[in-house]
Length: 236
Image (cartoon, rainbow, N blue to C red):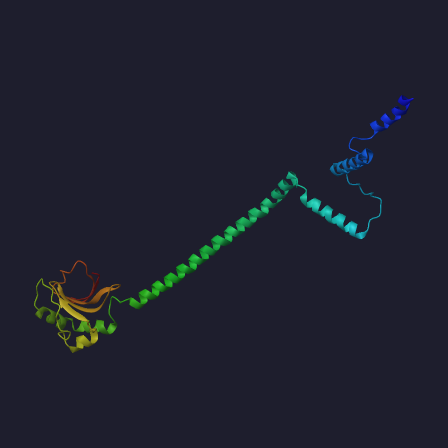
């Protein structure tokens, strides 16, 4: 009889956990936690809206905006690019030709204006510093009429190969000095030089009285007035 009473006691002892805690509640809690974690990790597709369902104005506007953004992100077809580039090629070529014509035309106009300006300045420079080779009519008449007396004064001056630079301006008379207005008178073996002008640009100009008109300096440009009286010019 004692054996039959001990049997159910042993079964109850086997059902009790060793730790003494309620095992079924802990399992339920762990199971719910695992289910929650699995739900988080699971990728559930978003529900597709029903196209026939009515949508509010904000949703419609938002959908249109998203469609516009999607259209911007879509790649453009290569054929469309090729067609656009092909259609734009003549326009680009025409624009490039027009630009080159305008650019080169501007340069040519600038060079043309610059050339005209330089020519005008050069002519002004020459006109300001030009010394006429032949003197005025008054001077020409005086030299033609008085050439014999001028030649006689030149013959009276000592001749020689050495150059004489200190001849007085009134040696040929006050009338000659007043009409010719020489700035310097000197002589050499070829004759007497009544210099009326001298500059780096025009050289030396004046009246030359030759000792022998068949023997003239090689670097002298001259024009006969009368007898042995010449106009002269030369560059040193």
